[in-house]
Image (cartoon, rainbow, N blue to C red; front, side):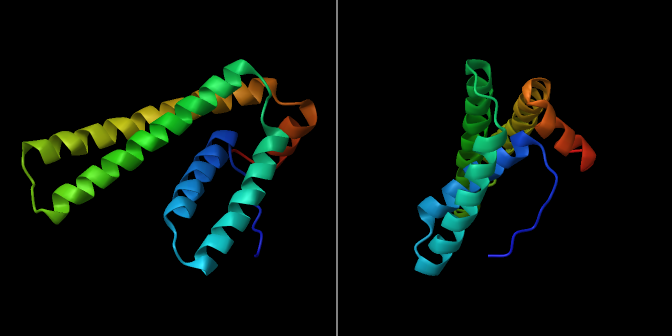
Length: 134
């Protein structure tokens, strides 16, 4: 697997871990599962190295996980409505809920990144700021 180094915030890394875990859980092709597992392993190692170890951080991480799961469920519900060609009031309500869930996820990610930036060790913080904005 080629590794591409991209500066990013910790919240975005955690969100990507959640997304890859979801894909791994649903993938049936062994080759796809192997690639997803490798990616997940690398991302989890990086997250473990740079994540603050504290109850407030754990709570913020859980809020990002929960918000991502809400979005995943809303996407599935929207696809089900689309498959049935049901574009009624319920579909519009789901679409609005989806947009609000995206806003909520962004707010949770911002809170997590703000907390992490205030608590990261100096060397990790310096590495992040030297590589540009996250």
